[in-house]
Length: 206
Image (cartoon, rainbow, N blue to C red; front, side, top):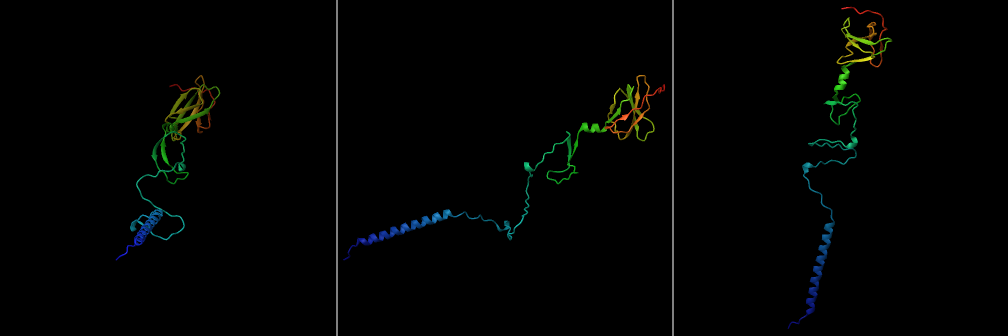
């Protein structure tokens, strides 16, 4: 005849509860440890990785891509032009190496170009003169080819006339029409040539 022993059942149940509790504790510890781990490095293909020995120094990296390089504002120096003009041709691109004598672009200003081809003459006033006559000829010509009577002024501008290609002269004229000898004009605009003294030289009659 079997004798019932309930204490055995209680011991077995206690062991099961202890095992389940132990398993739960172990799972909780493993879960916490996994959450604390850092993410694993991503995998890459072997052909896209360059392997080499670690060295100290500068590293040159060349990259090819489609687009345009935009410099930072700190590296851009704005140089205003002294003369307003229109850009005709850009000789160098941004980022090019330049020197003091390097031409960056070609500019055009109609007013400056016109001033370059206008002959500006200036002379000292002659006592008793009421007007002046300006003469000019080509450098290889023996005689005066053109002339212009101006008022009682000491300067005149001849439009569309290159001063480097011509020889100029100035003569003083008094109120009676007497004209002095022609004084050759060979001075730049910054100085002045003195017209000759007026002498009684009758003009030839036509």
